Length: 93
Picture (tube, rainbow, N blue to C red):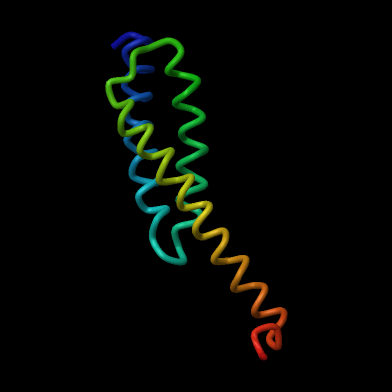
């Protein structure tokens, strides 16, 4: 295989990895690291996408959306958990 073919295959594979990590990013409590990985992979795909047409673009976009949602959702949950752990009397009336 030539270099262009290998680069395109890697871009398609990375698009699917972004999708999978984005979906895993929606899992409760353990999803945050997967969501971050999905966004890191999406950046690499974006760079490669400038040279090639991405047949897995919908998976790439879905991975970005799920990863972003996972970061927002679980980031807020972790902030609330940490806040309540540091301020145990904050919920008392």
